Every structure is written in structure tokens, then in C-alpha cells.
Length: 298
Image (cartoon, rainbow, N blue to C red; front, side):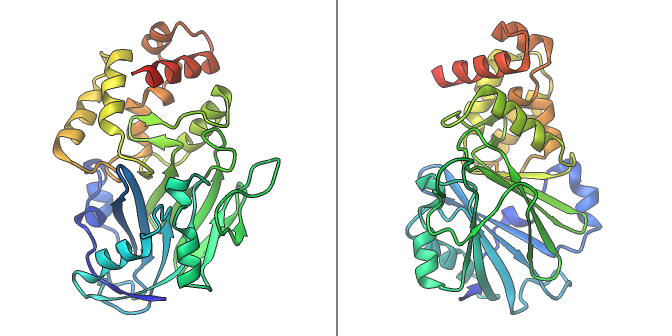
């Protein structure tokens, strides 16, 4: 299916200030379009500019949707991509981070409109797949390619759901991760199907990605996460940067890196004395469990 390429939101070219020198030297082959949907969700369009010139007006750009979490997802994508009428996009599939309706709810519509689309998603260790309309089951370490240069590595991050997959995307020096409901700016997802140990393992896994990896998450929860972090680790100077990010941006996804999260996200800082004192925990699992309990109660 071809959609006319258009409104590549300013979000696409904005990057955390700490990466400015890196981005300036890049050919911006990889484009990520952030699209707010529902009340606080995000879906994304991941696409490659095939000419390698940085000119997004070229035709034949291949794209994947990430978490088209709305029955009207294609209409929303089309609206965003038609406003400037700058080319065409060939949607070849969907990356689904987990089976929840607010992330996979538009998969059926995509398949109906684009029968050739590949729907990627994970599965729990036990039981059948739960991702809507899934055609390509993926597991930890599996790799997907998009166009000529974008590489996508699947990272299994069970806890929020047992079929949770994060997608680490690279194109040359550019690096990003679609973290679904595992990692948020300043927070993490609820443990609906997992344990504190699993969330600690999953966040530690994401923490091994290069520090410059840009984080694209599933919901706009940053302000609430900042408020919580101030109650747990009020003397952390990095929180002032997170607060500035919130004050300066209505939409915060794509504005932080893995390196940032390790500095200000209390769920990735379980060994910090102030956080252990605030939770009363003595080991990582106990600290993680108490943090989630406290955050749920806010």
C-alpha cells in the first residue's frame, strides 16, 4: 500500500541536545514519525529514505508501523503523511511491542487494507500467540531489515506482558529503541504478567544498549514519572534536566536516550543508596517491587 508522504513532524528531526554533534554528521536515512493516538498512546512510522540524500521527497520509501493502536490507525497515518504531499510511502508491515489492545488494536485493519503486510510480534513462553493478526512470530535476538540499511533487532522484555518485545533499530550511527510499555521516560510499565525480577532483568537488558540510543515509548507518562522520582530520589540533579524536558515539550517521546534514563529513571537505578532507603529494599527485586507498589499508589 502506498501512502503519500507528507507531514514529517518536527519530532522526526529533533534529537536530545546531547546528541547534536552526532546527528549533525549523519546522513538521516532513518526517519521516525511519532503520532499521538487515543488518550496518551503513541504509534510510530519507521521509514527509510532510499536515496541516501536526506531528501524525504523521494518516492518508494519503505515503512513499518509500530503499535498501530487504533482501528483508525491507517487513517491517522495517512492524514499525517499527506499534509505536505512530499512523496509516497510503501507500508510493508507492523512491529507490535505486545498484545494489549492499545498497542495492537489496529493490526486487523492494517492486514485488511494491506494483505501483504507482515505483522511482527512476540509470544509468551507458554500458550498461543496473543498479538492480533500476527503473521511473523519473533523471539529474542531475531533480526528484521527494512529497505537497504535499517536493521531491527528484537529484544524479549517479559514482565508487563509475557510477549513483550522491544525493537532496537539502527541505521549507520543512528540508534533508537521502540520500548513499548517496558521502558518509559523516567518510568516503566506495570507488572501485569510478570515479577519484579523480570522487570529488573528487562530494564537491565535495555540498559546494555548504547547510551546514545533514543527511546520511543508507548505512552506519554513522563510528567507523572518525574513527580514520582522526586519523592524517591529528590537530590538527583539529573531530575532537573527531566523537568526541563517536560516544561519544554508537550510530547516527550524521542527526547531522551538510554544514557539519560540510567541517570534519572529510578527503576533503572536500584543500587542507589537513596532509592534503597526510600523503599526499604536490600536487593534489586525488593527495591523494584516496592518502587512499583509506591508508583501504583500515586
